[in-house]
Amino acid sequence: MRQFTLTVLLFCLSFGIQAQEPDREKIKTLKIAFLTERLNLTKKEAQEFWPVYNTFEESNNQLRHEAFTKRRNANLESLTESQAKALLNEIATIEDQRHQLKTKFLNDLQEILSAKKILLLKQSEDDFKHQMFEEFKKRRREQHGKP
Image (tube, rainbow, N blue to C red; front, side, top):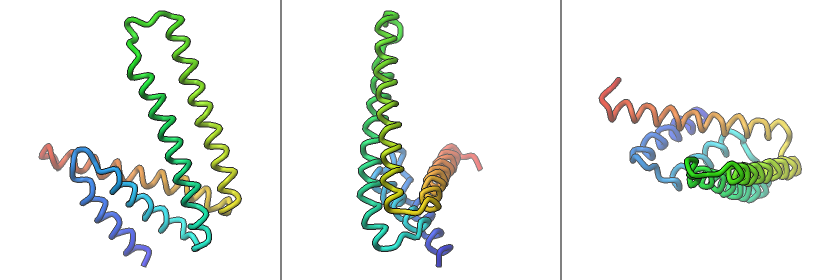
């Protein structure tokens, strides 16, 4: 049954990522299904886990986007050394906030899941990213006529 579910998930994944700008909601839905299957959450665990996980993901993504935007919008050519140092400090502060957020997230998870499932979560997230990247590479090769 698990193999069948993963096969269906990967099939949906390959259909869901056909556009150049993948639909984030489809990817999010696929990720939820993938993690739910991998973690084998009980009903009680799922009810407690998903709100914590979603809150963490949203906050972490906001902080990551904020740091990215600051770096991208900085005109390195025209920055003075003191402006560059100030920008580095801002980015470091954001990274510290991300670290604190991650620490809180792990502490919160320990109240919901076993340590083994928390480690499995990280591994499953990495596996999902890897599968997404491989699917993206495959689609790019197909678009450019390469095998």
